[in-house]
Image (cartoon, rainbow, N blue to C red; front, side, top):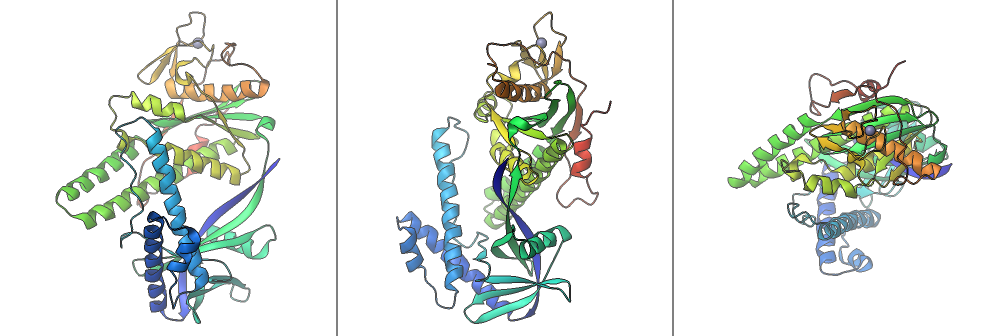
Length: 438
Ligand SMILES: [Zn+2]
């Protein structure tokens, strides 16, 4: 068992009962100024202590200021990381990352620490969660929170249970409504990957996410699911085309709005797909999620000729992070395996075959498999590799694999948008379609 710290964000709205909305507005604008100044000073080589001193504002809580500066520096650090990655990779079609904006466009939230800039309390009589926000020294805005039950449950746990606590909160504003996004912290126990009974191989590629669950003992396939996100690409393409047209006509404000929209859409897709993946794994006894080393995927994409990569590619790394994150919350361990020739090896006999479109073809005459769904085949290989890793078997020297032909693939398409009128099927329902019944 390993103990992992985890955080989750509870999204709520403010129902203001006392205090002035204008104080919140002033504080938001001050927070934005502080963020921008922080980024400018960082660019000029100032260190954190110097920045904290430079950006001091009257009429703004010192504690809030520290939190806002820390948040801006965090954004700067992720930019630097991305930049390093960019210098290190070979693909010439990936645009150079740009530094965080220091103008009025960013949605810089007011960041606050619990009990300092904000405080939440549970009112037992009303059954409500009350808030106090301090946008300025000696000025308090009070009221109660509104939101979905799952978000409230998180906050209540943080207020009542020892192992839970409240972290920072962010005050956001959109279309006349104030939102409070509250970070909730706890720790979860995650079993060791070696103790897992089910191996869930995850193959992430530019067409779909392929999943296969194997019983470690018998190597029988318990489930297999291919999540197609073709419609997602089309949707992103659509946003991109409009964005580009607006750019050509110099309509930058629309361009920004659409950029935001495309980003929110991608976020929604990532969130939804990662949920399906984790819920797929949850249906089997003691699962471990197995990812392949992502460096191989970049090569595969580089050689794809038909791809306009910036668009057609989902942020794989981010997707994997989200799946890992949700898995940890659900006490499912994760593991990574090296994966040379993963998509070119037969999951049945280990023979090096070849891909033909979406099919994998095995060239071993004595193998029961002649062809298989190429991405599913790869996901079986990923699961098999973790078995070999735990058993201490050298993958390259042994050709023994599952020795089993795989059941037919259940393929589901992820479609719809975040605001679709016809509600798309639930993640759990999609996930359960991949489970085989005997
Ligand atoms: Zn074979």
